[in-house]
Amino acid sequence: MSHIENAPPSPAGFRIVDLFAGPGGLDVAADVLGHQVTGIEWDPGACETRNTAGLDTFRGDVREFRAIFFPHAQVLTGGPPCQTFTVAGHGAGRRALDDVLKYIAQLHDVVRVENQDWRKIFRTWRRISEDLRSRERKAEKVKARKREVEDIRAAKRRAIRNRLVHLGNSDDAAKNILKGLKDPQKLEFQDYELKGLLKELSDLNDELAKLKDELEELGDERTGLVLQPLWWVIERSKRPGSTPYEAVILEQVPTVMRVWEEYAKVLATLGYKTRTQLMHTEAFGVPQTRRRAVLMARFDPTAFANKLHPGHLPKVSESHMRYQPRTEQADTLFSGASEEDRTERPKDCWVSMGKALKRAKEVADRLKLNPPPELHDRPDFTVVSNYGTGGDPKLRGRRDHDNPAATVTGKVSRNRVVRKDNGEYLNRFSSAEAGVLQTFPVAYPWSGNDVPQQIGNAVPPRLALHVLRHVLEPELNDEEAQDRLDQVTTALENWKPKKPVTARRRKDWKDHPLAGC
Image 1 (tube, rainbow, N blue to C red):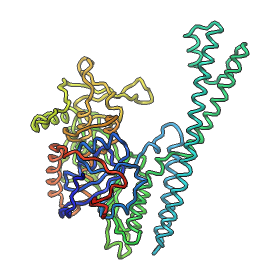
Image 2: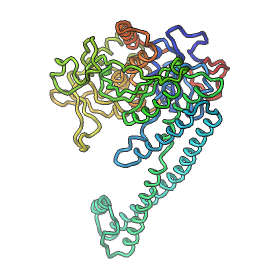
Image 3: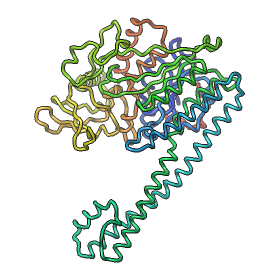
Image 4: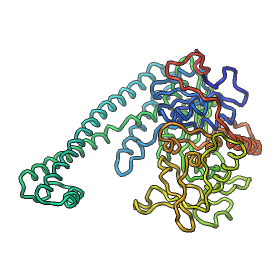
């Protein structure tokens, strides 16, 4: 059963469909704001967390769904996978980005034509989808061959090692030779069998390099996923009998900003006021430094009817100072902010890890949560990152308890936590604590597999509060908006799971309020 009610939403409430919904970062923020959200998510672990939290969910690949399946949704949100644009060290990410921008341009060209026939718009999307599917099928064949070659190569390396030992080398010497085996054919050995094995290994290395290059050219399925929200907006705007979404909110890593900027051009053509904004999470009360590229849009039917350029939404005002790793920042009211960002209201200092975790314990004690979340008492501590810095894997990033956390990733459970004064090992962050650093409620019921990855991939709910409030409640003045944020921030802290639910499948439309069945 779903917790979404069939009764009309309150005047301040919207019905939201959230693509790539994850464990529910945006959804829990929307819930405390009084909106009704249906998420679409394919990951089993994230769906299990959503089920336990009582969040309405369709489980499946977003590509299996369409905007027309949810005709009563008023707002579209989402954060499509981003890894395809952030491949470090090669041009694969750049090529994937160029491909997406090319496809967006094709869609823009067809929708900007006045009174364009819907069938032509749909045919354009179908050609793009077929191209992406064809490349995906080719990539799967290349991946299969790559796995096969890697298995053969591993067997060949074992054979070389065994031959080296047979020729009188020690195990350690054989291992060291293999470790330094960058160009097998340059090694000089008199043994005929060993020379043959090295030649075969060299040929396999060459084939693997070619297969990797081919995969980079083909891209992967995530390249097409970033186009899904745009197509949903186009379908709702242009398909006969459909009505445009009242608002659109999308977020991702900073490298996706170029995609959002091109999205904004298409949305402007469709009659939306838009805003793209690079948001620093600590500047919105999140106790970690993290940057997110956000696209916000609000449909303006008056401008659309008069064929005027709809213009831009205002920026979301920062409530806290941006983090700078120096002690004097606390004395700098607007540190890290431009003149455009400054407001009359003084900004609060960023929130530290220690403060956020202490507050979580107070909330958990007051709510008398059962079972109690795993929250540790620690002296002043330092977090030692699982990642290297400055290109040196041995040089680990460090943050003290009285600073915001570094970006919380899927490796958060691997970060070491040590005493600040003597380096003694302390308890690593639990799932509840890592969730708190993402501003999830302390009562959030993390479930399923790979919880650290769920947490690292999630939208920080407190950031989502600011964005949702800004886009969906533009009528509030500054004082009213601040009162509203204070109210819902407290509600977010005190949030408890609803009755558990079961995620629906694609065919389970009966009686769903967004489906109109």
